Each structure stands twice: as C-alpha cells, then as structure tokens.
Length: 242
Image 1 (cartoon, rainbow, N blue to C red):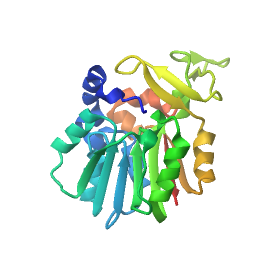
Image 2: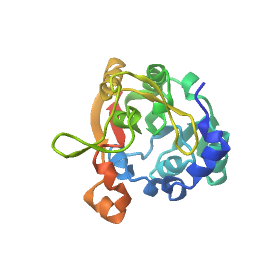
Image 3: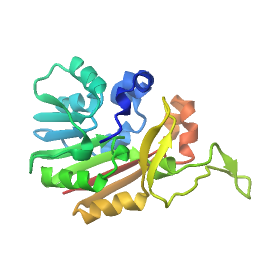
Image 4: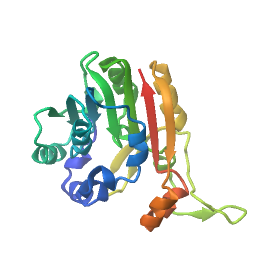
C-alpha cells in the first residue's frame, strides 16, 4: 500500500500552508510549464492521479472537460477537495494507486502532479493508465527530479574550479529514499530519468516532451527564494501519447 503520509496530522498541517496548497495551481511555480504540455480539454474525460485538494480537477472543468475524476489515498485531502468543489461532474474517489484498477478506454487525458514518485510498482500503474486511455489519449505528469530524490549529501559544495555544485550520491541505485520533509520518514521512490523515459516507451507510449523544470528569470525576480532551484531542476515533467 502507498505510504499515506498526507493523513499524518503534522504533515497535513505543514502541507496545507504551502503556497501550492493556499494559492492552488498558480502557487506551483512549475504549473505554467506543466499546463503547456496539456492538450485542449474541451469535451474530454480527464483523470487526475493523486488529486489532492482538487485544484486541477476544478481547473479541467473550467477548461471544458465533460467528466473529471480525481483519485487520492488521503481522506484528509479528499475531504478538502469535496468541501471546495460544487460541481457534480467532478467525482472524487479514495483509492490506493499501488493497486488501482482502471476501466478500459475510459479517459482522454490522464494527469498527475508530484504523486508518482511515491509509487513502488510504477510500471503496473502506468500499464493501467495505458489501457484506460483511448487511442491517441494523453498522459501528462510531474515527479520530483531524480537529482532531487538521489541526494545523500546535504547542502552545496564547490568543485575544483570553485563552482557551486549540488552533491549527489548513489544516483544509479534505484529504490526507496526516506527523507524528512514536513515530518520525519517520508518515503519516495528514486528512479533515474532514463528509467522514467524507457518505462513509458516499453509500455507503448509515444513520448511527446520532456522538461527538466527550473524557474525562469522572471520567476526568480518575483520570488528570489527560487534562485537555488535554477542550479538543479527540482521537477521532471513528461508528456506522452497512447
């Protein structure tokens, strides 16, 4: 079963204070780049894996999606999503993505934001996604960049030329990584960039775009705290077609 860290009271309280939780999609600095990967949603059936507070589900409806389903393992996240949604066309479902079974050819677009790096058996889940998409359907998702899930050494250091670098260890050793973020013992699955790409190709997806996201100069000017994120990409964004 997926580690349900979002129902941990300490974690949920901290997560609820993040800009992306308070401001929604606009509070996520990678959102403009992720949005650019999405197809036209008018008349489409959309599935959000790891829907959280339901921000994307509501946005998809505003953009013309005819049916939207949001799936999450967290009761706390789904309670907030339902409380802030007044649209019978949006359905929120509690389910564990590790054992998720999806209806065949039921969705035109599958979306996921920063959820799939928690999944142990990602190949099984993406195989489900492949069969639930109609031919030509789109998969768009983001995960923590493998550079971020791999680090074993804290802080910045300098290389031989005095340039600031981010030290990482064990990048090629895939598997679980336990980190302390908002609470202790948050487990994420480290995979290399090549593993994400080759997994999609092996399942028969046609890869459309890969983004190693970092903030723009304009974003750094508006939010100077993002400057360090320009030194190494915090997020990996991928778009594929069935």
